Image (cartoon, rainbow, N blue to C red; front, side, top):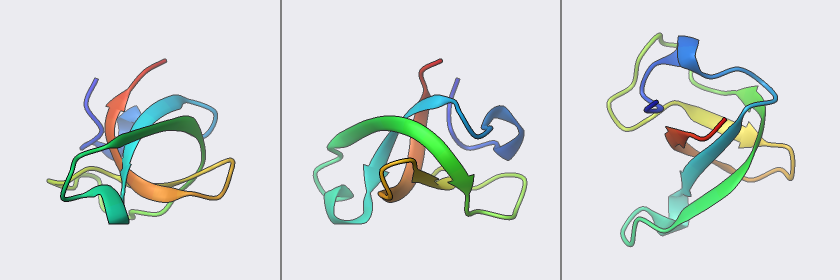
Length: 64
């Protein structure tokens, strides 16, 4: 699943995100969703989330 639709993402899911500083390279970081930060139902660059370790980025892929 992609990370562009808010309803696909819930706290506790394992996801792959791109951090702000990694947007140019596309380097991905994996983690567990703590909070959803994007309020709109969809976003073309991915829903912004906060991981349990505090990192913030846009979801590229839902892993499980």
